[in-house]
Length: 153
Image (cartoon, rainbow, N blue to C red):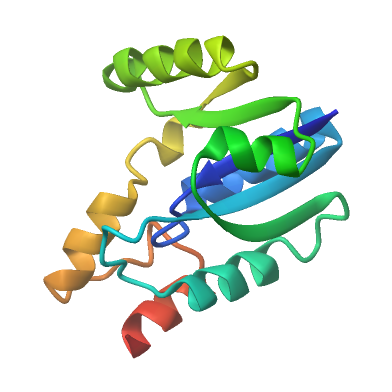
């Protein structure tokens, strides 16, 4: 089974990496898709996010990382994914994620919702962006390579 874990990964967090590792173990073949949203100004450029995630996933044999534009379901078709993977942090994520899973099912692809590890529930990209903007320490939420990239940005 090939799965697709798609997101902006802006920036990649420890929570993202936990989902990558767990999804790869379940699927056997995982594509991490970095979506490009031309209407949003990212904290880290697409090239940086791609390089970071490729490095962070280098030890995982059946994981590849690619950037894409457009609809996630179209990218899933392009990479022959049979399931989408989504991380869910808690009950507050359920309404959005279940609606998205239902929409994806109607578009022809199932969604696997993986709950976040309890210790990683606070790992949100938005929190990391806020901390970084305020000049605060992001290291509890991101891998060292990401913290370094943020410090350099």
